[in-house]
Length: 246
Image (tube, rainbow, N blue to C red; front, side, top):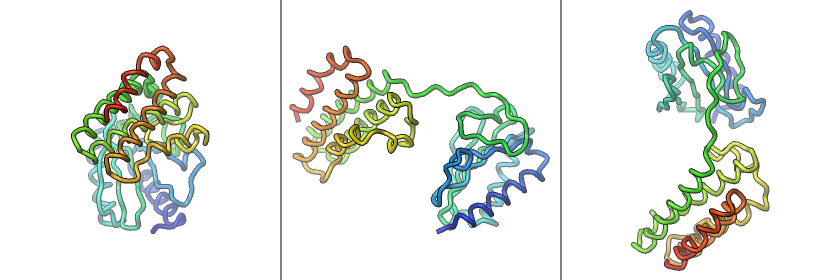
């Protein structure tokens, strides 16, 4: 397990290496360090602005992470022309490095602290759409019912969990906290979260699936009613029929 001191030392080393590379036109800290919320479990988040072809820098940094910093695996996420490469080190430290063309070196959210270089204003990302979350909710409910009826317990668990996630993301939008990746769930009121505990499965068996599914339908309808009462009214009867049909 890495220590905060080891994490800080590695981050300082990576920042120094970026400063010395003429191909890197800017660097920013992102994530918890940029937001002033770093704790002992936080990872390293860096955002690089690059001149020319980002691939050369990405390849060189990847080789170095494996050769010098005991990287054991990595994966890529891509947004526009930016590659977010996530490195997993043997110390269990996660190092996220965004390799962005200079035109995309800029804040996509509030956690963006420029260390050097000039940031370019980026178009604001759209938050999740409440109507889309509601639609995904009733779609998960339909598939939960069919999974239970077909005796596919683990698929049903996946669908019930998906329905619960839509409820949580809707609540995050309503309370104006981050809705993606569960980042705002802990910020929701305890009184809102307690009923959601009933949607958690204790076992994969028909009775338990029925119970958790019924609870998920109820909390979903309750949350939709706070967002769109008319839609909640239209959804109520068919969704309750789904839970009774199992």
